[in-house]
Image (cartoon, rainbow, N blue to C red; front, top):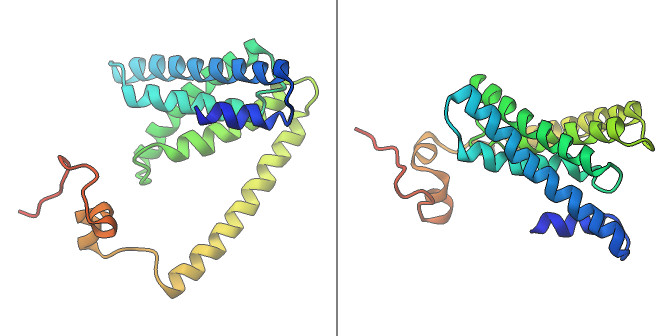
Length: 189
């Protein structure tokens, strides 16, 4: 529900027609994301995958956020559907190269965020694909440099890893004193 407030508020207007339009593009992109992710995960994994469908909804929402007020309703469906496909491909690719992203956050937010930003340049007559590409590159460089500096400082001072015992036991226990997933424990034999 928060996405509707976010996207609807992003119009920066109390105009009911403009906000209603954003609600429609937002909800249709999310629904199309579910369909895209469900169909592709079913094809690739030979079974429907609920977690992929849920990530498909998030992918559709992320994909439409940049252009919710500037693309057509049909374009929002296409953007959401493609985001749903992309999230499945990205999750499987990131798993294959063994990057630790258990909930698919990189796939949903980075991959589909880039797609959504570029989609504005593809589907909106008022926006340039080249400018959207430039924006993606500028944000990417800025975020990479900032994260590199921050993590370098953290690694050099307090460290960025927990010890192996706490990692195996789970940070939920070490940090919060409770098991987030009670039925999922690694036991030393």
